[in-house]
Length: 157
Image (tube, rainbow, N blue to C red; front, side, top):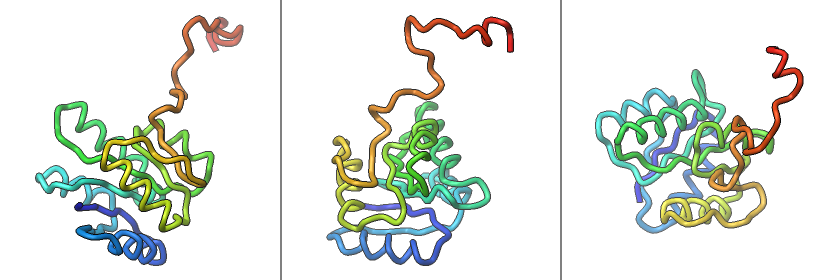
């Protein structure tokens, strides 16, 4: 398995690398910016997974995930994306940017392994503390069927 890690935090980098490299046949390539990650994907480098810290600069892992999924909508073959997020509330941003799963930092090495294995295999993310899948989350910007517009929205505000 070939994993592209996008991360600027040295401490987190060590945690991710030791958790991933401990597995058989895992190759990790780490880059510091989302732009470099996109450049690698655009030139045709193949990865089984993108594991990105949402807090990278200048654009962050959320924008990276959104760009990767936009390429998928254009017919490109892209790897799944797991985001490392700082807060529980960020899971809604993970849904917006179409990440396949999220892990709240700092990642537990065993949970990281379980989530990576599930996502790469196309399976449901296991129900573990601090991890989740965006697959079954409601869309945050979609109005449910049968919902009535609010009086504020009807007034044009």
